[in-house]
Image (tube, rainbow, N blue to C red):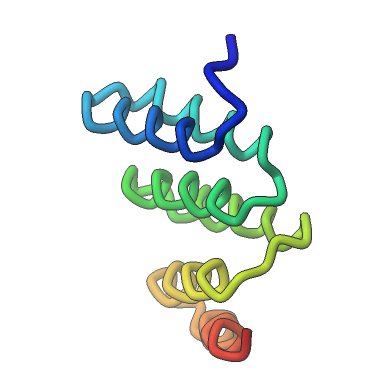
Length: 104
């Protein structure tokens, strides 16, 4: 069942699950937020951060690629992609995304 249509409350619930160590519920909540609010950058950023914290940079990058494909483009999304690509030693794409982040 859906708790609420308020993205802020859903984000808080996901965060609470994380604080309680309920990572599967946190992941499910973050995925529901992304599905339910596909035009909101925070939907993608929160899920990407979760993936990074779990040591899944490729999955985090895929989430951010989904955001760009959906037309959700912010400086923070490009910055996070740049950081991920830099850490994955993909310097050319990292530089492109850092430049894009600065230009937005």
